[in-house]
Length: 141
Image: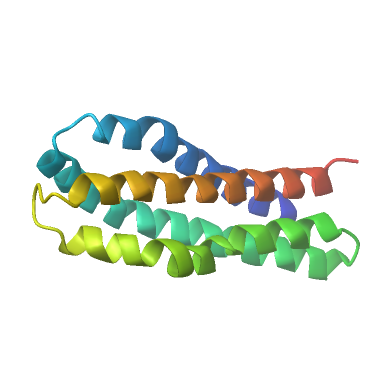
């Protein structure tokens, strides 16, 4: 049950990150700079809560499944990969997020920051998909 719940969390994380990267963010980038920034700010605030919760819950559950059954390193590896989203965000994305939160509507820097944010977000997609694959592999016979 622990591994299955970890898989669900990882899949939800990956799906949300994928949606943002390939649907929401490209649509946002069709807007003018001020509107794109105005849309990014509340979407980021709400998305952060969901993505952090899924990363922590899925990561901890993957590690707990490995610890509980002492048999499947895929669960631990998937949990660790999912948790890597948190230090990655602090190390690579935090500066861009801070600048975007402080940016004035439609500043010259806005478009470049949003574009950079979209590229950085692709790593979250990859980490989510890898974590999902690892945990799923651990569940398969």
